[in-house]
Length: 133
Ligand SMILES: [Zn+2]
Image (cartoon, rainbow, N blue to C red; front, side, top):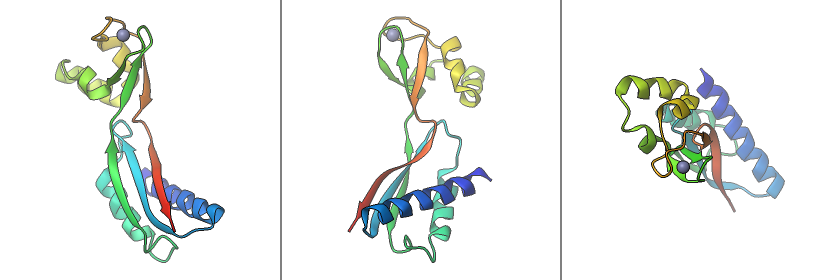
């Protein structure tokens, strides 16, 4: 269960940040990339359980999905990953879901027709905001 490792890491990172800054955590926000293949519900649930007994127990938190974006290396356009693969047949979309790099083999840039993409965001789980008091 990778989610457990991720959530422990999040709690540690937020706690360390608070320690470093010398404050108490009031609120923090976690973004789960749409390509990260983690269950947002499970992460939320684990967080709720694992903060018990830690200094984050009283803090509010939110866990939200983060859209994946790709950049076209030919023209520099930034494109939404799901918009880019939307016109593709379902079996191709499914393949790309498991191997996002395949997007370069199946999709074309709507702006320039290029086929060289880099995935810029949406592959990781990260803490995007911590509010201290
Ligand atoms: Zn392009």
